[in-house]
Image 1 (tube, rainbow over the protein chains, first blue to last red):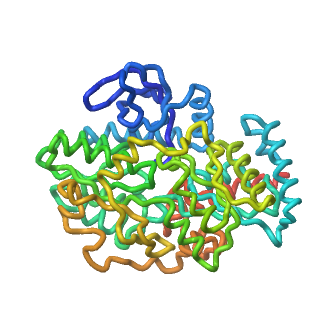
Image 2 (cartoon, each protein chain N blue to C red):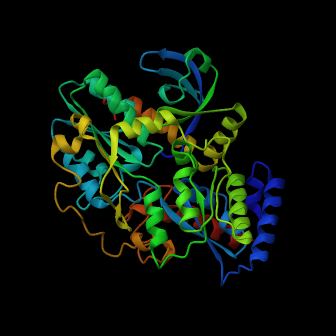
Image 3 (cartoon, each protein chain N blue to C red):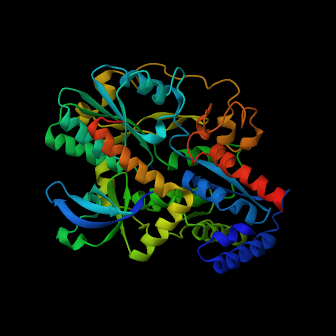
Length: 96
Length: 381
């Protein structure tokens, strides 16, 4: 919950609500880009961001993203976050 | 030294460890007279145990585990209030999974869910917003907890709900802030603290200036750190060098992620939606002035405390900790987790009695998870 996970912004899904699709360790998840928004949102495509509970909070470079992911995997946090994202998807359907 | 092999760059790790050993010797710190360094963030506590940094560093350094695990410092009374809200038939109660197993005085959220309450584990407050959109005839409550890393997410979600005029979405706000408990610990005459390793991702939001008082008023060094093991070692070295040189400064080891002034959009959202409460209760630490946040009056329609008449200020809500639970003493560094009579017997990660055993960022859970492995390794050597 407290540690962000790196994700790559792959698509702007809702420019008005500042939402984008991110690829997080192979899982696609819609995230808010309000905190990292640029005047032209398409500038964010391909960028890496640290994502906290569904919000991109800080842009980072690809090397930092890889190092951070490795540290999160070491702590078991990457897996926990991916499981939480799956929980979130099930919660929408009320199937938990 | 087998842990060093797990480092991304073992050569660099060994070099930093040698430098740490040299500075500890220059300071004259020993096992009997150590320097006390508090890592504030629970993620750092977890990393220290995961990588055995407490064993790799000289005995002249004692790590004091700080209050930076939001699940661990949540008083039992707040869990009781969550259960009270969640058991209302019209409510869908959404929470981060971390909070599910925290014991309440009667039951945890996990037990309330088993008893039939509609409690859903979500990844993000955005999930709760979407559940509210899809269920207009239900009241959707999001359990907002965490430090400044998660506070922007609920602030932005409340702003979004206001824009959409969602009438069935509220936040039960239990957000807390990092600097006030640090001040409380520094004011505690029983605490011996020589320096701090500051939180990385919290600082990404708030920047480094909220820690200025630690250096300027209390004369203690603090270094904001990343949470790779090498980041942590480098940060400990930076703290030690400040102590050796008689300096007290706020340094930023994690500048590649942490800007000096934080994230302006997040800070603006927090300031728009939240204001400090006069005081807030922390498990093990008691009431601390201005350490918790509440939703401002202009967003009262999105405040679960207002809508359901529960929560802080609704009455005397403090609940005694379970008998034999020593979380408070562990939290303030008075005893180690293994000094608690319930540790590993009456309190385990599977059946936690106290909150420090619940989260992987809690000191007791970290001891339990990695302590057993260490004993095994030592026996094998």
